[in-house]
Amino acid sequence: MATPGPLRRAYDWTAAHAPWSAWAWRNTALVAASVPVAVPVVLGLAYTFSSPKHLFKTLAFVLLLNPLLTRLQRSRFWSLTGLDIPKIPWARPWYRWGGLIPRLRAESTWRQYGYHLVVSPLAAVGGALVVLGWATGAAFAFIYSWVWALPLSSRPTGWTGDYVAFTVLGVLLLIAMPWCAALVAVLDSRAAAVLLGPSRAKELERRVEDLAESRAGILDAADLERRRIERDLHDGAQQRLVSLAMNLGIARASLTDLPPEARAVIDEAHREAKEAIEELSNLVRGLHPAVLEDRGLDAAISGIAARAPFPVELAVDLAERPSPTVEAVAYFVVSETLANVAKHARATRCSVHVRRRDRLLTIIVSDNGVGGADPAGGTGLLGLRKRVGSVDGTIRINSPHGGPTVITVELPCGL
Image (tube, rainbow, N blue to C red; front, side, top):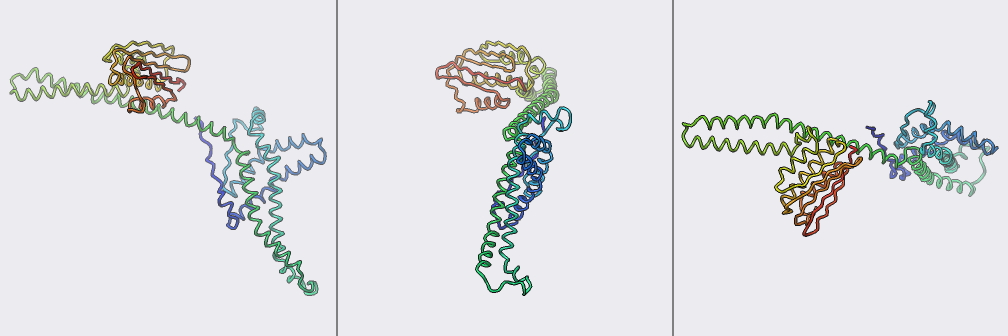
């Protein structure tokens, strides 16, 4: 079973938009750190622009550096913003035999390629402009400090309006730079989350597969637990009750000289012991009938049909035995359906057809009762629908008023 990838820690967009908090400086550090990472790509693009015939060399160079650049970008986002971009699992490293071709064919490689060739240079340009804006704003805002720092002989005479304009422009730049840094950081982070990690469709597909495997494991564990309880009841409590009933029967037959009151008590205890045995047998059969495990679905359903209070036409065609989980669901579907027919349908006959074709087990139960079965009107059909849905099966109920009622259940046998 595939293990789930690392959970993606969400980027705090609200904090990123609070430019006067510590996130302003963290956003600035994030966009500034994009500059050195993008230097190889920018140099390669400059080399290509100097001579277009070098385009293939630049593309091959960036493709060769793709794993390293992706690792550096992931580290940049994680260390500075806490954004965790999941790694793409590969069967083999790209530098080993048989590892490069699958990567070249993978859609995720070309998304990363697009980030390094397009987004990363643009983010580096934005980062450089943000750093330049901070430096320019600080220089302009404190221009009077620079003037006072000059020697007296070098200071300009008088106060000019240029210094005031420079100061105002510097203050405006210092106010705007946090917003600019946040904008560049948000755009860069969103592009990296989409392009550098696994595609959302692939990630959701893998999650669905993991959940399906987990659910199948839970169903198998529940079925094994039902079998264990059935064995414990059959070999433990039921055998003790049988022994008790036998002892009471022997006592009733041998102790003939007891007072009538004592014999009545023994008779009542013997009768209740036999009823308890019968109830426990029904309970054990409801948990997991032993015949289902020993002889299969055909024999188990035949036992249900034989105990029904009306004639049941049974046809079972199983080219291959289903898995234990599907087999148990099919058994309980037939059992609960016949129980519902006996309670509510007022039918005089019923038919059960079970067949398997390829990876699909089909169960059709029909009766000549009064019809009008409504899944929303009681818990029987709702429980049947949930039991079928536990193995990704489907159920169709056709029950017009006046009958007949036809219930069709399809269970996948791939579990």
